[in-house]
Amino acid sequence: MSTKTMTVDWQRVSARRLARAGLAAEPQPSAGLDLAGTVASMAGAHAQIMSAAELSVAIRAPGAAAVDVRDALWNERTLVKTFGPRGTVHLLPAAELSAWLGALSALPPITDRFAPDVRLTPEQLDSVLTAVASALGSELTTEELDAAVGDLAGPWAIDEVMPAFQTMWPRWRQAMAMAAHRGVLCFGAGRGRKVTYMNPEVKPADTDEALTAVVRDYLWSYGPATPPQFAKWFGGTPAWGAKGFGSLAGAGSIEEVDFEGAAAWVAAGDTAFDDAEPGGVRLLPYFDAYGIAGQPRDRLFPGRAAERALNRGQAGNRPILLVDGVVAGIWHLRRAGRRATVTVEAFSAPDRVLRAALEEQAARVGEILGVATELVLGEVEAGPHA
Image (cartoon, rainbow, N blue to C red):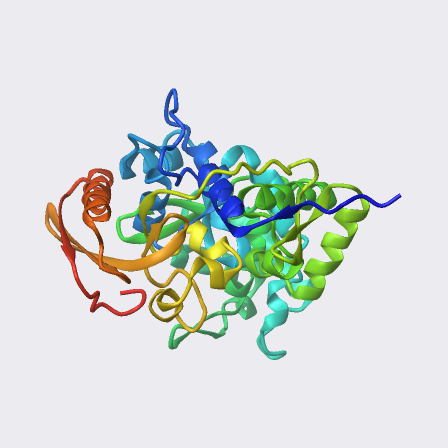
């Protein structure tokens, strides 16, 4: 006997996503800071630019500041900085790290992306992973880790053959994300301006169970979504995503809904969508999780937003102004000592209500970063990722 597929529209989906992301007009009150819970609700916070990650997390937690995010990361250790979805640097909840690593280990080997004469062989990869685990008995800088891996694995591991940022990196570094996914590498506290790494000594969870958990968490935050959308967000191929969703659907872990005429998926049983309208004004930083994960892209970045807020279709390269669940502008922060100018380029002339909301958001950004802010409305002249 067939069952009727539930139908949802953009308004209801957007309102639910905003509420769950802590970005709605009236965020839920909290008894205290739970930044690990905040990051869990985001399905990870992009941390390639650490100051942006601090703002991204704190903007969702009333009363939180950047220093609180750093405290959760380096003192309380409730957050971990490591290589997450798409091989990019993320903050992840420490309590969920085993599950994340188990799911990330299901991805095709990252080393397969390199040319044959650069790529690590399976034997070399095993040797590198063993060397990294052994070397990181204490926190090491990148250069110190290079030397240690060369000593433990052999000089071939540090041959400078890997193209990276107009220079060449040692061969072994193509396995850094994989070492993180195997639970033997994550970021340590900075040593001055130098990055350090440490061994979190976390065993990845069972791959099938972990991938199920991560898919369900992703769908809770950003569903309904399609297999290609999840695969793009996580770092897999469309075929890999389709196979995984097929298995999860067969196991009853996810269920299909009709999202404005197209098939999409939610976690099984997670079919409650209120009739509330999406609301709220937020200034979100570079690579904020909401802009990167939110789909369909044309609904989240309508019209002018697709031209100004996306970089050749890629989200994250510009900070975005989110108004009622859609990208309605871009912005830029310029700091000068203890003061900062927040320039907001709204795609339509802001009325009195939006101006007041932008003043509040600019002040909140300053509160998080510990600077006094001045709001300026006008064109953002800085380029992407400036």
